[in-house]
Image 1 (tube, rainbow, N blue to C red):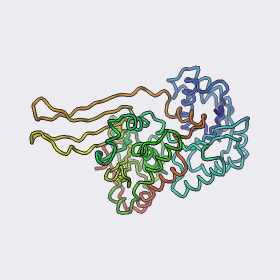
Image 2: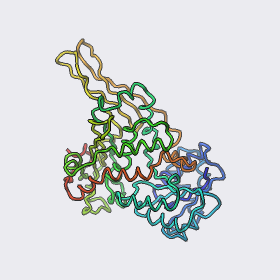
Image 3: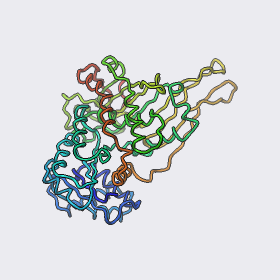
Image 4: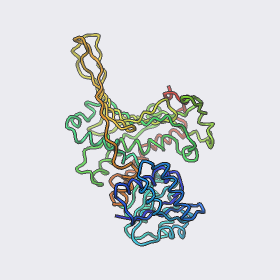
Length: 451
């Protein structure tokens, strides 16, 4: 187990909100101890003492659920180096030390190629690991180029392309429910399932993230990575084991089976939109184009919907709908599995059966099955719902990811060919949208989305 992490971009929002609390979770659970060391590197002209004070403040704000002694221990384990993370000499000083190190690129993805180049020139101790956040590249070509750079630096097993959705207990529950319950797996195919929706709708608007979001939009921010990863777990064939090779091989199979989209497919089976001025509860929300830091000429979407079909024996004939939007009337974050209607209904003409829907709640956690049952009179039907809540996870998603990095288990990270296949799936959509083959719709903030 590696006992040293270097955070490049250590003073950013990712470190403050997620990585530092994740380390506090690992300390609380006993996965890291007094020998663990954290090195922060960023462009701010700070001392180690100032960085420790800042880390303690962020832990008190974002990690208040963890014991105070664990928070103090994480802050006390830290030191800091001012660094240009694209300069080999600065990077060499940051990673210097005994034994292997995990280097976490908590940075804008546009910097990844230059930072990986600096790491290559600086040199890493044998056994070191590299961690990169999504999105991995900006398109298929850049993902392939970045994969080549990484291959020259460390073995593929030492590259962790992390997507925290894969470490969410709720997302893993999709796979667990499928494979551990005989009542579900025999029905898990196009014979019985008409459509599967993977949805991440948010009431949250831009919230000051224009510097990042306006360059990517909903398609690249959510659909290309998070939602495609959930699709892989929903649609994959049962793996022999949950080891990294078997699990990731089956995920790549799903992406390879996605039917390539033509321009006509994109025009008829995708949608894009952005929010106009509206009202969220008691608050007025400006239109996306009027948000601070937004360049309207980029035509960035805040809502994206893509329908996909898989050319495989199991899924031919089932529609997969991936959707994500901001500033909507309600949070809806779920996988909804919609079964086909029953072939015959031996009830009165006034009865109607609503198809069964199995819902995996991603946030908040939960599992709901919508069923039909008989009503108070013979021949009547009524809708029923069976609901279950899951126990809270032992570790937050980022805690699970960091533990896997330290232990060297890449099963929940994305393999290089998988990252490239994800871009291949959406490359036709990106191209068609850039050529305005799909109109940019609008929806009022606080509404259910485009009509």
